[in-house]
Length: 412
Image 1 (tube, rainbow, N blue to C red):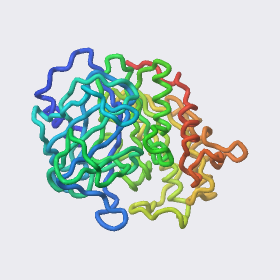
Image 2: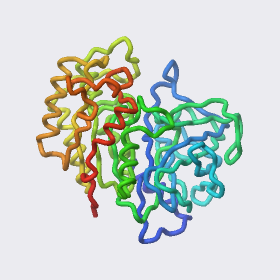
Image 3: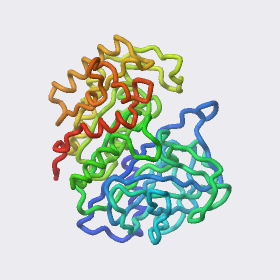
Image 4: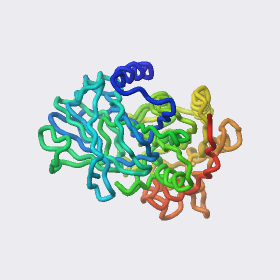
């Protein structure tokens, strides 16, 4: 239903734009899948905004000569009003690049009202965007938004203005954060692109533990390597921290969000699945004193067989769309607050199936890139952020560098 709604909205939003040439190759160059607010009050209450401008910095993977931006009100309590918006290229120091500012329009107008539950794409703008370059997206929110449709682990800057419309104007932020608000996808038109590779997972892929603003998540490292090798793939990071295959947590389950966060992206050719540790950790482990009791993380009874069935569903749905699926075994997590012998036994059984069932089109050993050679059940010292679960910059770099680029071949 969401895909159908997005198609209708996008058709309307793009109706006033110039017709796309036959050579257009749209890819998802940057993604931050939104999730429902953790709470509307208390310590985990979602942010809300009224009469302010948000400025968000991001880095694209593949470049192009046109772009459009997909906003999201997927979990909004009501319609979301955007009073003005723009995109501009910035350099590594955050300075705007002269001549690169573009106003965003929606169906030919500078304003939009995004229905509750819907994505909403801007019109196409012409802008030369180099691969691995940085963008700043600004938009004015003239009315109260209610709890934010956000992506919690942004690993880059979100700045909030004083009251008023500051789109295209300098301002001193009244607050800053490292999450994404209402900003879901940046698509670029790159006639030389080979397609989109989607990284699908949890906080390990989302970048918990990575240095903010440095683009050191393992999908970022993969994008760097592909571009250096002359392989023009967009890499879309569709991970959500706390995500699980079978059950909702911090976000809908992988099965529930798959259509919106993978299949709705343009020209997806490959899907890398690196997920499952939160299913088995929360099912078999005992939450430790240092692990936050986020809402929704209680885990119902699950079995190894149910986990395998979940992976099979992902593979089948991807194959229906002609997407090749690359699986990785679940990574080591001994020493993490929710590790247990029972969870480790489940991990070993699931990993054996991932590697030996033949269900995936290919496999990659992201788990071994993290693993301690002396005890592969745990992460190598220095490769985690201190919690034995999330990668450090060094660990995430090792994961991104472990992937064989020959896995990604041109797909018609």
